[in-house]
Length: 528
Image (cartoon, rainbow, N blue to C red; front, side, top):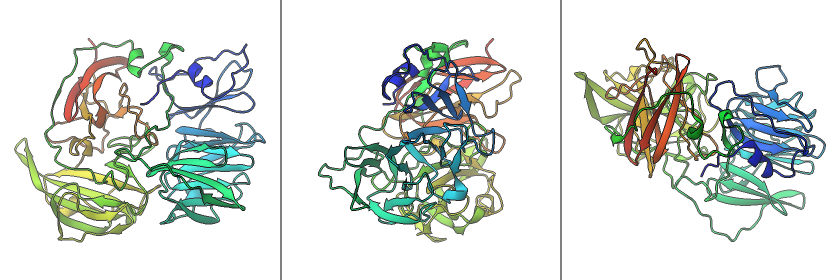
């Protein structure tokens, strides 16, 4: 389970204490909803480093009374991204950080300036660093990512890439690549007495140096996988630190949502169109939806409004048709992405309009299906890759509800914003033990609130793409014809939650109950 802990508790998990006379000031909170902390580490000098979701780094130097704020939008030598999930500290004062989606960086002057490795240096892979996925021993630094492990012994002057038997399609900054892992998809790293333990999609791997070369240590323990390949004890993350709670222990963010109005509990009801399976099978890959960049999301304003959902997986992972239908497109599409589109057998009718249902699969490394093929749910149609506009190996899935059966309205290589996309999480069956939360957010004028942030749901997996808040749709994303939703979120663990959003400058709260396999509908309107 996700651990929600305070900074005071976090300090006890990372080694010796700060000086006794030094008190921990509250983290600055510009939103009033709290600060989502992804990692807390203390360096050898006693300074406390806090990595956050979307707010960069907070640094409390030993003996200081206030936090320093390090973000990506200050200077050319600032950090590369504000989603920080890992730190590592070298013996000569080196400070490494890793991000959720934009590489990593190194400071040799205790955080004043940074050298970064991002898309230009890494290529279309290596962007997603594993949670707490940086470890150092002596002059050696290892960085675990969703595309393997990068190793340097010279502060980034030279690198070795460690991947799986397929090998990385791009070595990034590395001079050489070693195919040592069963799976390149690394979810955690930790030092052992004589080497490094890597938690991967297929279980633990143990690496060490023998005779000057990296080798895989023999492991007699069985490789056990859960539904999506997470190790049975996933790395815990610090979670929410709501400023309104001071330093008190919080079991969930909802306990600290204050200042709004609530209504009765919204109750679940049957879903209308969850006809489809997942495009990635949990026995061959990662079947979890990327929580940082769901349908309609901009990651808090950093990216374009997202037209689909993503499944992060190693290149070559089989992609399956989500339902029965006919392949109507197979080839290059937007920005050169290898793409498959399926017209499904089922249609829906809403407001006297008939809608055709399509699924589209982008960024593949190779295609199996051809135009005209009839496919059934579960058939392999392609393999995961990073072709087109991609910064890691993943499948981008779209579900379209179109009033026209024109293929050009569904796949257009010149159009980044298709006209009929809808939220796939209202079409795909949720994971066991989870349900769907969907609804609307209205302002006092009766208009939808675009790109609003809805807080309060806690999701523990997948740890490598942490969930923080729901984001309502913008101008280029669309509602399901039967729901007219402003947002929808699947794979929500069953239970009761208090959700909060700001409307016209005031907090509005709603209580919801989530049940497995059902949808909970909730509406937010200004408090009266």
